[in-house]
Amino acid sequence: MRLFKNLVVVPLLLLGLAYMAAHWWVHHPLSLPATASDSAPLEFEIPAGTSARGAANRIEAAGVRAPAALLYAWFRLSGESRGIKAGVYEIAPGTTPRGLLSKLVRGEQAMVNAQIIEGWTARQAIDALRRSPDLTQDLEGLSLEQTMERIGYPGQHIEGRFFPDTYRVTKRTPVSTVLRQAARAMDERLAEAWAQRDPGVPLQSPEEALILASIVEKETGQPADRGRIAGVFANRLRIGMRLQTDPSVIYGLGDAFNGNLRRTHLDTDTPYNTYTRAGLPPTPIALPGMASIMAAVQPARTNAMYFVSRGDGSSHFSATLNEHNAAVRRFILRR
Image (cartoon, rainbow, N blue to C red; front, side, top):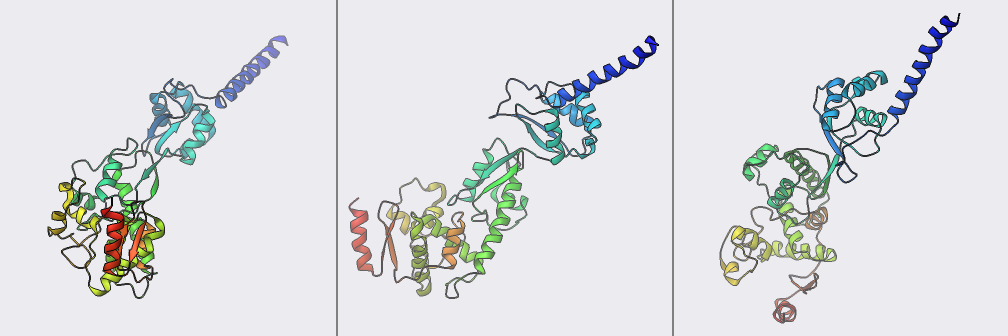
């Protein structure tokens, strides 16, 4: 009888101990390399089509100090091994096997911010994204024209095409994917703004609105002036007066501009020289934000035909040339 009891009790005791150990392990933080921290958590990738066993192997290979066989056993015993999703993941200190599996099943991938700033040129935006260590670089060696083809906009000029915003994307997202998302966002915002345009605005298409918005973006130092600056340009367009905006001249100079705009630059004709040519330049000159886009399609009603920087970011507006010349002497020549 005693032997029979031992044959029953001992296995049950061992089974209970095994259960307690497994329960402790599942809820106990995983051991990570000393290099893993809140600022730089452990990263690993599960490619599409990877099995639960393959996922466990990749997690161990990334540096988690737990046998892949044990991780795989936990995935199978949980009943959720088939729900593990592909992607790039991060493990922060304190993550338990239970928390890790929950993350994998929910597909909670590592996320990063990809930022595009108002007033940047398209080239500046691309260069910033190319410098990001968290994105996959898939545009190396491509020209701007080839970049537009890659993101699905063949034949379109690249300037002004990306909506300035902070895009929340999964880590290792290709740069081309971020640009495609930004281009589609610009299409949507521009269409939304064009549908709300002032009936009297002197623009013939959303493309012209984008061009004017880019000029307003570059000319605006204080947000409160944005509508009036757009109003000045709208007034000039209505009567065929040249826009005479320095940012467009500078854009046309490209790499030849050294930061010092001279009279010879204003007198040298280029497609972007709004001192020598009437109307809008042929393309946008920067990436405008939504406020500048709305200002372009809903400019403030003003009798001003001129404006000049006060030197503090704000602008002084004038209705006549004499008033403008006096303002130039006051705010520009004295400096």
